[in-house]
Length: 271
Image 1 (tube, rainbow, N blue to C red):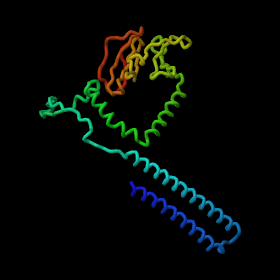
Image 2 (cartoon, rainbow, N blue to C red):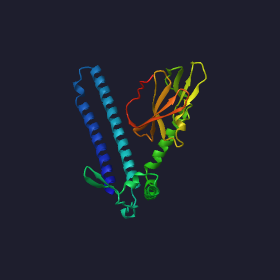
Image 3 (cartoon, one colour):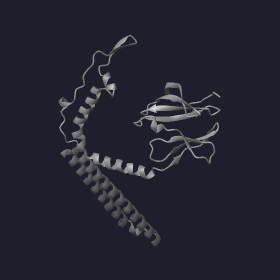
Image 4 (cartoon, rainbow, N blue to C red):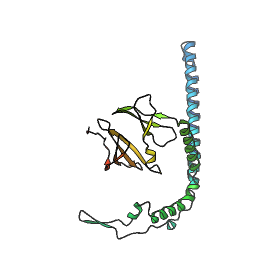
């Protein structure tokens, strides 16, 4: 830590010395050649060029010193934020389940920590709690924690300011005009429809009601040629694997569904 601070101070001092030497050389060159100017205009022009060059060097020197100061402050704070005792022997130790063995292409593969893939398992929850208890004192001392919190708080406030009603593109299918609409305070836009553009809108599908925790989202919609059936894809927790569901023109969910669909677009060829 001490060596790092000494290195930064020497680096800043060196830059200041180099900058002063450049100014000295610049002035010496000017006065050495002052008698060689052909006329007053050339003399004045040279003076202006030298002044502009000097101002530029002063600005560059200021930026360099300012950046060095910021580097020093952040480096010092960064080192102080990591001034904690680390004891790996105190880390929570996950249990091994040696009974999980799979035969893959004739090779037996052991997976003793597969139980961690189930976030709803009580053992998984307890292990995560133990990890959080171990890391929390370290994170609480971080110099950057408050800075990130202020950034996120500011971002949330900006989102609240921009929360406004929004409409999606309108498309006609069968006898109805369909479009996405949000009041501004919803996580997802709902799908509405109306028979004419002057009618009162009717809620046709609300993705916010698909799950209580908001982990299900609609990514695509498509209609049959006659507009009697709408297909829509539902993704859980942002997964690439989606499920395609179907809804008839009366708003009733059809029993058909297609599981584990990855990427691609929905195109309905049925009448």
